[in-house]
Length: 392
Image 1 (cartoon, one colour):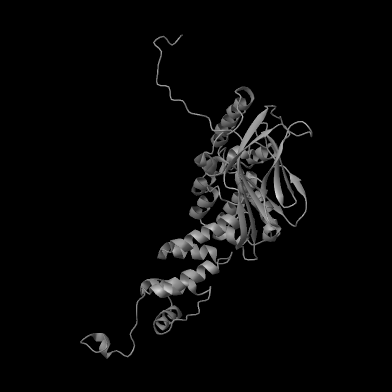
Image 2: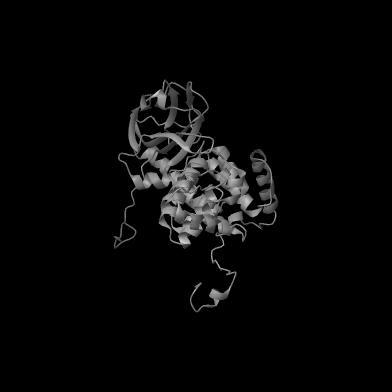
């Protein structure tokens, strides 16, 4: 180009047109400089631009360095930018790391900035996952979604996380006046968010009276969605009461991944804790205890009063998975443990240790996330036989 019979050979300044807007002069300087030295200092604030330049120039070594830097610097400030860029440049391992970070932090460390930046596509993946680290119960997932949707619709809002829910409820309350009998997800404004809300596990929201009232009053979720879930849960309750339903007998991973109850708890410091998650669970009143570096499940039936109907079946089973996690200040998972999916069979008032761990591996605050399936999925019987005499 400089010495041949090209027009550039006689030009003092040559302007290059770079089609990728992520690439700037500084990124090109780093990319070209990497050809002459092995050590390149890549800051988190510059890694996307340098990755773009490295991909354009097909510099595999520099791409590898960018990949390493991104994995080590995923934070609330970088995760969404990283996720978008690695989708463009095909770094699947970084994309996976970003999703893992989001699954661990979306509910445990809620953040206004993060809610604003999360796209519909990413949020859909998070809400649909059984690996979402849920704190408290499914109702809290719905509440987080409501706040996220408000910030997507009103991105100019500036305030603290404590103010966010109140402002969200006020805004949707004003919108309801113009719904004309429709729920928000049925309006033009709400339709883009339907695919995300479809992944809510509504059966674990309507099982609690206070939560059911809120979701009805909010008028965000279409009433048809709720009606079908009420019917489904009513039949499940009848099976538990009248059909000798004793709970799951084997691990159905697909059912657990797609339909298990997601709940969690934060233990601020070491000590003794005992709790239950709210909601009707088909007569299985499960008490959870953390003490002496172990977690104990107890099927509560006779000894203590409880708020709902209790099954007196001699034995009941539950499918479950426990995950423990502790995080550093950037949301990076420091330590984690899991039981994997298991079946537990308990007699009346029986308790059992379900997880033991070494105190040296514990860091507080400790986050506990559980998946439960209290009732086995109903078997669908296909009957194509039509009797000759319908009256019989």
